[in-house]
Amino acid sequence: TGAQRAPSAASFMREGQARSVSNPELGIELGKRRASLVVFSIGGQSLALSVTQVVEICQLSDWLSVPAAPSHVMGLLNWREQPAVVVDLGAVLGLPARDNLSANRLLVARVTAGEAELVAFPIDTGAKVVPVPIKSRIGATPAGCRTDLLCGSYEADGQNLLVPDMPRILADL
Image (cartoon, rainbow, N blue to C red):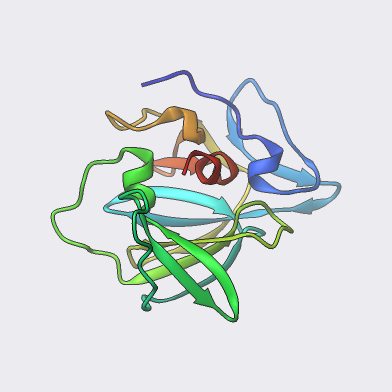
């Protein structure tokens, strides 16, 4: 496990600030408004993004392969006339390889809330929206996981939840 950081405001929302608390809590408060996270899994590992970043979760669709692209770049997707790079997020984060592709949905997200740049990645079924703050504590990071590409790792509701730093991940491609 690496050093854990509190979630940054940029990785959750363009506006507002992540609250800094001594008892770690995944939470963002924008004035009196509360935010939500989309919790999903890749190969059995739970991850979360701000609901403001997630554009759509749809059926797995075809994408265009990109010659000479890094192995974790699966291709390019024409999502509603907008380009989105399709990434194997599990491979980028260094999560254990899957025996078979259990993903049957595609999550399309903005790199940062309010921005036009899109990224897509295959996910397992069962995504859900969870209001924040979520009572949590710093959690363990899976062996080999790239902590430099995470906003944090938390234990919440009995599950280990990773929060990927999408701008940093795209910059790392």
